Length: 291
Ligand SMILES: Cc1cc2nc3c(=O)[nH]c(=O)nc-3n(C[C@H](O)[C@H](O)[C@H](O)COP(=O)(O)OP(=O)(O)OC[C@H]3O[C@@H](n4cnc5c(N)ncnc54)[C@H](O)[C@@H]3O)c2cc1C
Image (cartoon, rainbow, N blue to C red; front, side, top):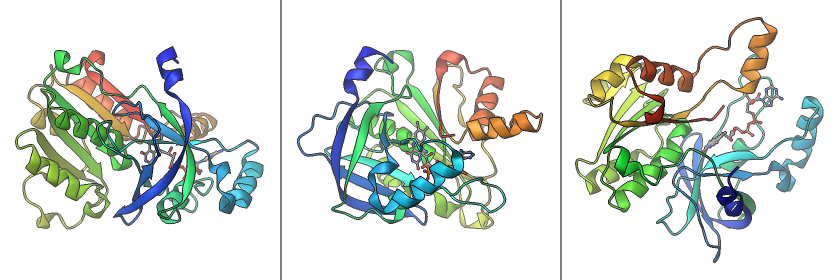
């Protein structure tokens, strides 16, 4: 970790000023920090330690016994951008799927459903390598954001920041979800498109939506793949790509190893493979895994 980054990391006691229900399983928490100086970059994340919530104590202890190790702090990207007054994070509830997930999720259900306005909590930040590089305008004039689910959070911070500070960049957001009702920030994305005409193109890829007739234009059925990216990004050799979403987890790796298999690629690995196959260079590619 660089010295610059270490200096930036500290603990803050924050108060939840507002909670915004984004979708059936996703909530944004607007966090009031008092007079703390908020020195972060678009794309940075904070961490939240589950041990601080008394209501979770027995559950945390139980999971630690089951897993034989201490529960760690969870990372949450900032949805807010440095020019905004308050910090904000957006949390999507992780599901427990009987017979498929090994343990029930610990922290995300609580943050999504049980933290009310006025609650206090401690967050630690700011960190992470997935940020908008300061010299990005000298490298390209087109950012392509490829995100799935809550992977859109840091990209929205980057988009808001770049637009608000008048950077010479246009943005294409390729956003993957299962269904239309899972799309986070729908209204705010539309507002940004109205506010900055021609600067933000948004295309949705829905993997399980049955009711596709309701859409026109920029909503496609299926996964983000090579041909969709080729069609949407004619300048792929000069654009920069910011890819964020679920990737192979250490648990996927362990399980695959036990079975003598390679772990199956998830969203992140599939999109990176698609980008590489259309000739996108390493230097044009920025990514973060939520695995
Ligand atoms: C850099 C980064 C940024 C992120 N930003 C966001 C964000 O902006 N918004 C957001 O919603 N999420 C974000 N995440 C994901 C977030 O950190 C949490 O992973 C997520 O909220 C789930 O946490 P949880 O405590 O609810 O679930 P967990 O308790 O962590 O469980 C998650 C899954 O892991 C499995 N698991 C846990 N422990 C074990 C074990 N010992 N063995 C086998 N399987 C196990 C569980 O069965 C479950 O399927 C980010 C992650 C990273 C790395």
